[in-house]
Image 1: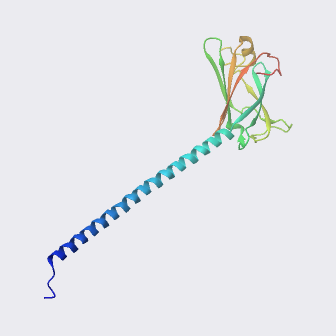
Image 2: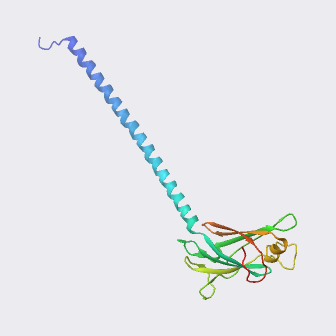
Image 3: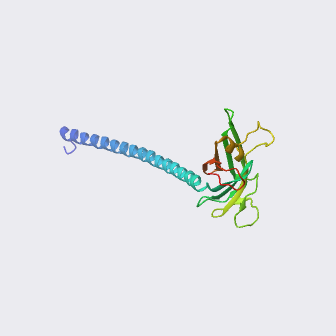
Length: 199
């Protein structure tokens, strides 16, 4: 007789066990969803951090790897002397890593365009030492830019002081540092004599 059990009591116990198993399944599902959500959030945060670091590095290179033009003078009929230095915090830059572009109106409805790097003409520190191949931050330098491709050929690109002065036009000078920033300057020649300041 002790082996007999009440049917009502058994049904209650079965129902309680089913609720417990259901709750455990829901709990495990919540843990899995939370784990997947955490993985997505962590992955997104890592990607954002990498993008921010890359952007910060690029911005630093662009701002610090830049040329500061101190002054420009007329060198001769066909060129300029440029006094410059690297921006504060810049890394050393080889003369071949500094590029220049010069463009102006050709006075015939077109555009004259010249480009080269600073390796074409020596860069010389202003302290009187000889020419160098690497520009260092905190040191002022000078170099010459040849702005007339062929002085004997009137059809070749010409943005030299004589051309600007005689035609009362301006030239645009860009100085680029490879992997760094760009400096922009406008050249206006009010006096084409050697040594005159270009504004």
